[in-house]
Length: 181
Length: 133
Image 1 (cartoon, rainbow over the protein chains, first blue to last red):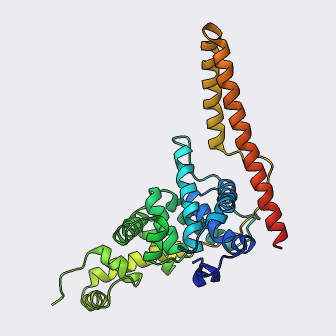
Image 2 (cartoon, each protein chain N blue to C red; image 1 turned 90 degrees about the vertical axis):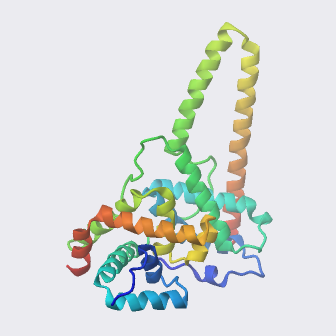
Image 3 (tube, chains in turn red, yellow; image 1 turned 180 degrees about the horizontal axis):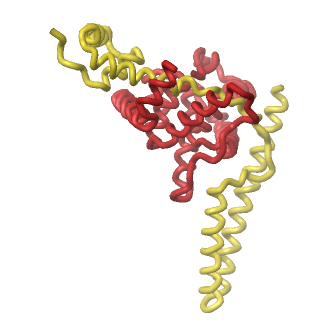
């Protein structure tokens, strides 16, 4: 699980963090969020760039009444939603896997990762968003609700339906084999 | 005798530690007696573990650029604009050429302004990030 940064946890309610520090702290989790939502490294990179440019332009107007992470993740999620709206219908999300050559023994692990990542991309975007925010980035239900702009009940149900769908996509034999085998 | 099986959504929230103490205790007591729910719980837990196990990817650096990045969606937009321009051109050749030229000129001016604005903001961001190092 990708744990959110120290800055996110301290939240800096009283002081405004310098923009370069904000970039340094959030570049990685924002990119990982977008990469898992889009399944495409090039698009995730472009969108991450766009998120920080939007944040940079709006940072002078940012007030500390919401925390930095909620604000930045919201920009990222809105950019993701815009991206989906503009995407040509029928275009596959999964464009190319990350990483270089693999040595023996890594192949199985990589295959497993790709299978899980591809299964995530088969989920409807609202479910995918909730499962990535909670299970991968480690946000609580309340934090997911704030970031995604949905109620606690919706977080709970989307997460449940996402996990049920993932079980169906991955298949019980795959899940059993990977855990025990 | 085992109590009534809880909703599977509750089991999912139980795994995440997102239930009230009272509800958590009810589910925990039920799980001790019900193998079917334990199995369901195991399935949910395995999916959660697999997603959580996806590795972290190193993020690229944030850079400044002189023109907005071109994505596949931008290409589609450009094709739509090209098609619309062609249609306008055909109409303009037959009917009111000066007006069409005026509208096209205005569109191009706004588009160039937008691109310039993005480039300027990006350059400013680059300078701020460089200064922050």
